[in-house]
Image: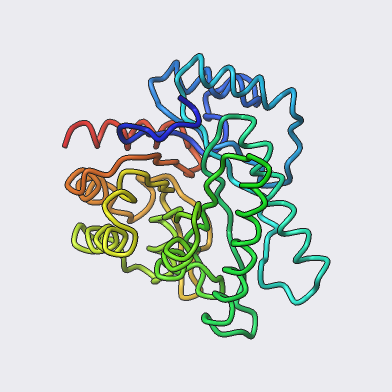
Length: 281
């Protein structure tokens, strides 16, 4: 089921679960199934270093274990870079993550899109939109089955507010948001942290992209430390002020389907906590 849209809400880890005996993607998938989780995000954050043969082995294992997969593309991406070589490298990293991720059976390719630098939101939006239209056309031409998911970012200096990511998704076929609720909370320096605010986020998604978008969500959740400049670092849920139970109640009330990827330091423990809490509601 790795590349299919999930029929429910699946919970899983960013990278191999903490309890995995080996650090490989295959052993991570086995651990996901052993502990009763449903999905895992392949972390290509330091570069796409997996070959085609390994990717096919990952795909086979995920299918056999019935584990949903997604990919986080490299961190070193800035689609608003003024330097042509850095811009080309950024595009190349998203493409490589999409190509190998697709061979793994991952459908969603998550990435941090850009920095504002000295540009306006509108200017960055325009530049990123043009690039993603070209890139999705290339993926189409090459038969690479991937949905590009610009992520909501955790610092006000980063392009990637909720509205910016939704606007990209509304403009471009095969682009959908990755909504990181910890990042929304940090970006706003402590807001975006109540049942009402979580419901408002989901209502905006539905209003902008339609009800079907709520049935194909990709989300990141973790504890987070933040300040006036936004995100500092990820925390375990119980060490943070994120009201995750209220978030889960909003997701249940909106009948959201898709993947929830836990990026806490204890990714396995917190993914299980989220799954248990959701089941208890």
